[in-house]
Each structure stands twice: as C-alpha cells, then as structure tokens.
Image (cartoon, rainbow, N blue to C red):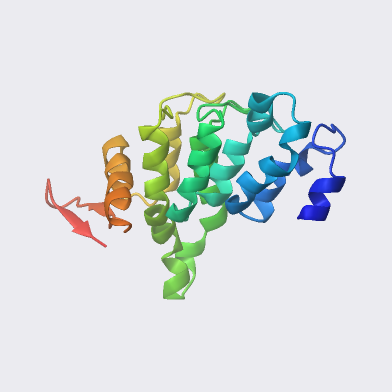
Length: 206
C-alpha cells in the first residue's frame, strides 16, 4: 500500500474508480481508510471533498463502504471514522441512490439465486447477509441516514431493502436500530425476526 500511495495522484481525473478511498474500500477493506488519509493528508486541500468525492457513477466513499463493508459489524468503526471526517450518509449518486440504496443493490446482486442452490449453507446466504448487515443499517439510521429519500425511480431505501430481502423477514427502522444497539451493547448480532402469516403478533427467531 505504501508504494501505491506514494505514486498515486489522488486529485487525478484520469481514473476516478482508482481514487484511494474508493479503491481500498472496494478491494482491500475498510480497515485501511484511516491509514490512507494519514498517508496523504498533507497533499489534501479540501478534506470534505476528499471524504465525499464522487467517482464516475456518483458514488462517494460512503456509498462504496455501504456496498462492500456493511456485512461485518466490526467494520462499523471504520464507517464511524468516515462519518467523523465529514462523509455524507445521505449523499446521492447519479441515479439518486443513497448509501442505503447501494447496500440493497449490492446485497441483491451478491445473493441473487443463492436460495435456489441445493446446498444449505449457500441457500441461507440471503438470510445470513441480512442478519450480519442489520447493525450497520441501524448505525446509519441512528446517525442520521434518511431511509425515506427517493432515488430517480421514486423508490426509497426502505422500500428497496424490503423488495430485495426475503419476504418473511421483519424489517423496519425500529428493528434496524434495535439490531445496532444490541450489537453495541453486547458485541453480538441479534437474531432476525420473521413474519408469521398464520398467527398475528408472533415471530420466529432464527
């Protein structure tokens, strides 16, 4: 990483997809974000722009973080770092999608068709990916992410999330916040609640 950072012109427009925060969040993981900034902060004239810069699709570092690092609650500390440095939790890309929209799109892309695979551990990916991402989604909302912002298709992040996750999972702002608070207090990922279409008010714990 050290060689890459010394030779990379962060202000270059030549290849925005290789912009440092986007690149490392997408390829190497969020644990590098603080080290990247510390490596080149003396060359940065506009800190807010650095942590909110849009790539060719309009994705900011927070969009990339949401799409590629949300599945592991341990990464929330790196999301907090981005947020404290000024990253906008409600930034919208060229399609009007916020980071919460991006989570839903990437989740759908990564898990599409997995439930049809005749191998149990693969078939359960759609459920386990939601479960492990719930603390991050709750963290976003607790810190001001607006789950009701519409994209250019007039779809809110909450609507999109509900469209792509398994239909029997119970999810709303309250359950996401509860998942984050539970993880913050216990360090454990809370079990998902499932809708029960046969008995009102009942749920099944996974």
